[in-house]
Amino acid sequence: MTRPLDMVFIGLSLSSSWGNGHATTFRALIRGLHAQGHRVLFLERDVPWYASQRDLPDPEFCRLAYYSSADELTEKFEAAIASADAVIIGSYVPDGVAVIEAVAALSPKRLCFYDIDTPVTLAKFDRGDEEYLALEQIPIFDAYFSFSGGEVLTRLERDYGARRAIDLYCSVDAERYSNTGEGYEWDLGYLGTYSPDRQPTLERLLVEPARALPHLRFVVAGPQYPDTIDWPANVERIEHLPPQDHPSFYSSQRFTLNVTRADMIAAGWSPSVRLFEAAACGTPIISDDWRGLSELLPEGEAICIARDTDDVVAALTAMEEQHRVAMSRAAHARVMQSHTGSARALHLVSALDRLADDLPARTKAPERIQPEDRGERNVAKSA
Image 1 (cartoon, one colour):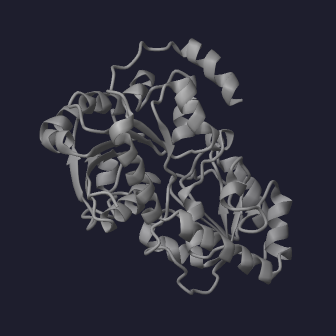
Image 2 (image 1 turned 120 degrees about the vertical axis):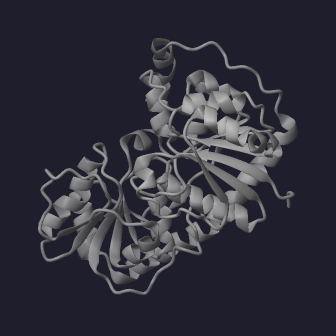
């Protein structure tokens, strides 16, 4: 086992899970690192929308601190960044381009990027959008850890200049996610923040089945859904569900629904943390389809793939109880073996160890590639 590492994470949010999936991803991973003896400082931009919705203001598994600008970040935490064994900057960090530039100037021992939104990031690049990461900054990272695996890793190295692309899927905290033994309150539920590109799938795979099965009970939990949505009478709405309530929520469903963003479907190999949470709670999963899903959870054995409304209706009305239970057990076993925070922490530390000696000295970023050239080079390859 490697010696204990001192690590600095700079991420979107650890303190608040409101309207984002980053917090639960970071929490599971860093809890795993803490349990293995590593020390973590998490730096988070102090913004009002998270400050007013903090559900983990004082984590017991790491040190959490705030900053107000890229300049303050490097002024206040220069010593910690310079001395850390690894500095990992996450996606969607406010003023991310400036943060990366400022941190890189301090020459940390290992500088890494953790993209929890890889398909979205690459789609942004192809539109010339560099909201939180500039294309020419990619080669300055010793490793580009990616929420997406499979073919996406090859594209990151071949088409975008990553020195080393390594999968680092989201994960579940096995100590906090398990079945609570509650009775079923809903036949099918969904947990997720409103997203325009997910809403048509949610309509097809939950709202329409609810209309077709008025005697069954459905639930949608998550913020930011427009008031204009016409929910059937048998669909309950929950505005926000903090992470500590997720196990109860999943355990109270006969099935849970997973819906994937369009960019992530296009990329493939991009499992949502909700898949792992539900499986850890022993809740059978109905999901839309994308490349790589059956490699994680085999169709029919560990997950039910729904391609249209009729597939969901059939699962809710015709699947035998023995099959439903067997499917949930198979998913649980796979997730507990390979997709916990502890498993992900071991994977991260092993990757960091391998970076120590086999990468050349960090170089300056290459000349900026113009959006039209980038699109010509990348869009055809991602089709």
